[in-house]
Length: 325
Image (cartoon, rainbow, N blue to C red):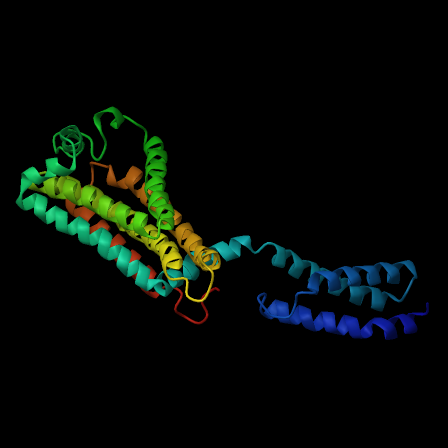
């Protein structure tokens, strides 16, 4: 085949491919480029034919430039996992939290409401703690936050553990609580509501008791840092579970199975963000909260900064139009 006929037959394809490349180079999330991989393979075939038939170097070089540019875009297109994860962290997760604000509000009221309420009651009526927690566990909690114990936030048998060992322990423990709170939402939301209230009561009772006996400074300086992520994560896990339960209770015009499937998509994404929060919480708890060298005031200031960071992130991240999708 003569070069002129070859160019006439395929010139339109090359021009269209060049236009698609320009769109991808400007915005790699451009619409209407689903056929790009197939078009790229066809262009490679054209380049191979041009070389084999000894066409002019001008044509071969032009096609080769298109192939090189196409290779770069195809590589970027196939390697978006990292970009998608980053976009979810920076914008997708906080947007999802705001979108599901009703469930987040309900879960937060149950969890933080029970926590604060029982903490005040135990502080005012100290013997109430033994109606909620066995005496042995109460004694263990006291030893963990005793100002004279020489360790902070760890029981006696774990006091000598390396930070990385405790980091792994905190991750497994926290993820277990979060998954339990989330998955039990399949019981028409009752399971999630139960675990939100239960965990709130347990944490609040310990807080009220330790504050009453004079261990408040060691306890609050320990929990205020990682608590920003850990407690928020528990509430969000409960919100994800409540969403599942609500899909079963009020599926609307959809069959329950379909309503549950649609709700599960967002709930699972919410849990992915919860896992990230718990990972951060475990790191802070192992490497910062348990440290005894910083003064309590320093820990309070860092803790307040972390709580404000979490609030700002969930309320405002991803609101700008140019934020990653």
